[in-house]
Length: 288
Ligand code: DHB
Ligand code: FE
Image (cartoon, rainbow, N blue to C red; front, side, top):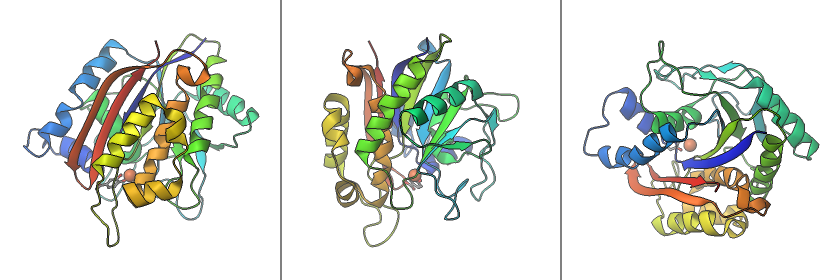
């Protein structure tokens, strides 16, 4: 049986990817950001997943106003790295896991979540920056990410976006789906994006440390309360792009305690401001 053994949560600030790609990680501005991921880099070597189910958002890269899936599961064998305006990031293409992805699609749709199936999609900073943060630099041609990745794209760009509650319930369905897959696979689920940030309008630059840390507390210890946060609170308190945080609830909903198991172990917690326009948050939770 496949099992979700851990969840990883992280912001996906594109400038973090640029700092890595341009060799700036040792600059004073960036040092404390990357230091917060030293633990995770070692942890993931020691707890290597067979597959990562990576919940992220596309930023009008693969999708656009022409087509807006609320939840889209990648069932392809591989995914190109997107060109977001400066050429594709110099990182390896992403190898998928079509068989497990197709199984999860079947199971989750039968549990009444209507997913969009995606067989061709370029992945943007929402997916590649979290991989870079956890796995470090990789040769774009000779290198490879250490394991297959199932991209799971959530619309948090164009309203109406899904509620935190819907995301949390979906996480539970994903857990059931993974646990009904025959092969013994160690699966990690990642919730990415956030934390507080607003990129536009009069409140551009907004950061809310109190909201972010209260969100982390709730996500760890009282995920039901975190799932009850309405959209308006994210937008008011965490800025227009703070709504990316609903994606963290999908990963949290997939953890064992939600299904009546033991509470997850908090292996790592990190919070740092600033990184570009965004507050960086990072958690690792383990199912015990
Ligand atoms: C920034 C953050 C994001 O989440 C994003 O998608 C784009 C830019 C930023 O902090 O600059
Ligand atoms: Fe973003």
